[in-house]
Amino acid sequence: MGKMGEGFRAYKAHMEAVRQRHYGMLMWGMAGALLAVTILSFGIGYYPLSPGQVISAFLSRFGYQGEILPQAVTVFWSIRLPRILSAVFIGASLAAAGATYQGMFRNPLVSPDILGVSSGAGLGAAFAILYGASNWGIQLAAFAGGVSAVAASYVISRKSTHSHTLSLVLTGSMIMSLCNAGITMIKYVADPNDVLQQITFWLMGSLTKTDMNAFGFSFLPMLAGLSVLLIFRWRINLLTLEEEEAKSLGINVRRYRLMFIGASTLLSAAAVCLGGLIGWVGLMIPHMARALVGADYGRLIPASAMLGAGYLVLMDDIARSLLSMELPIGVVTSILGAPFFIYLIVKRKER
Image (cartoon, rainbow, N blue to C red; front, side, top):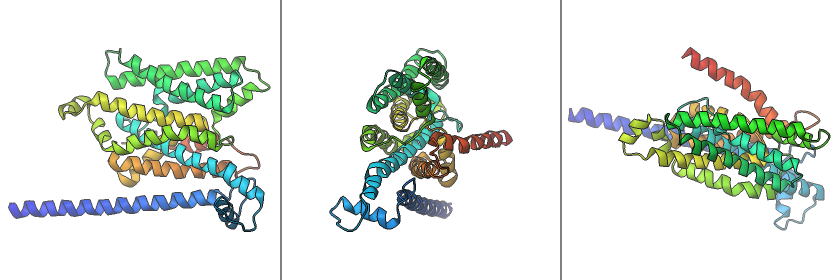
């Protein structure tokens, strides 16, 4: 029996080492793919840049004196760079937040806006646009609206006698409905020749007006949220258990749930206030990552963030190159996301 036990432990250790190598290779592969699509994206757009122009424009900031068009430098540093950085961090944020919510609520059909963050951000942005706020004011109002919606959902759910998970979902749906009603009312009273168009365009999601100032405002919340999820990602595995079972293991379920909701809200609100309503990323990408690395959140969160970043950069490339006019990126992700959602529903029914 001793030798059999020792052999089993050795086999188990060997299989874990194989899985770890496989995971490492996958992560390096995803990192390489993300780097490649990011570099190629600098050349895509109304003003195409050759690889040589991209390199020269990048080096120009560090004293390069070679022959290069001033327009190429402007396009690289003022348009493409903030836009691509925004796509990378928005995609990573929405995907990581979506994976976290799916684990906490033990439901693979959950997305980051389940607690009303997107609707709250949309309502805040619509108010700001209605009263003629600047881009900075719109961004700030969207962030405040998203955080306030989730805070309201959490506080109200604490008053319920039902289970906390069920109460959160129901309260989030109610807050989402109220915010959507507010958006509809604002669109109804807005000037159809100017303000209504701005609100509609913002709600469709776009990175057209993104600059380094806007990216800088959202960067810190996204960095903070991603850091929390990456550092404590192993704990999400415990929240996938039944609440009583997790408590029996000595886990402070309420504290960790609040921490992960806070981090995911920071990510979602910052992403929405930077790029508008970009749907489906937080629903689709965690499933793709789960198919690659499994359901262990220690591996799923980094994989989701990496895949989400590359996916949204690719979607932004399609949005600004598919037609002669630029498509809202939220429309592009929805066109791909809706069929994927139908596939998930059919697959779950078959099981």
